[in-house]
Figure 1: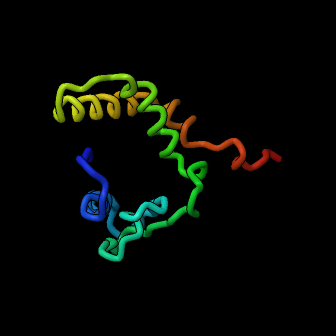
Figure 2: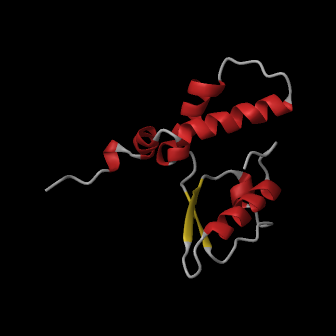
Length: 119
């Protein structure tokens, strides 16, 4: 989903979309930061989703921070967009290109300091 803003309403839409993708009888755990829209009392969390909030001020624990940085650096930085539709097209193109890079996805989601030692 590419939405024009981040707020409780758009996060609710996001949760509802995720909920539709969860297999019956299964539970999804969604790691969230401390953004106000992630912790709003207005949210109606679907029963098949559990939110797992990260500690405040801990972007190093959130793999999505590296994804956003990669997308910005590789596809979206230092560009001038003609209009909103041009921004949407660039974001969709960046995301679709990223999805074709499974090795990069694995690299960005892992943390060397969190790996268990091989015995």
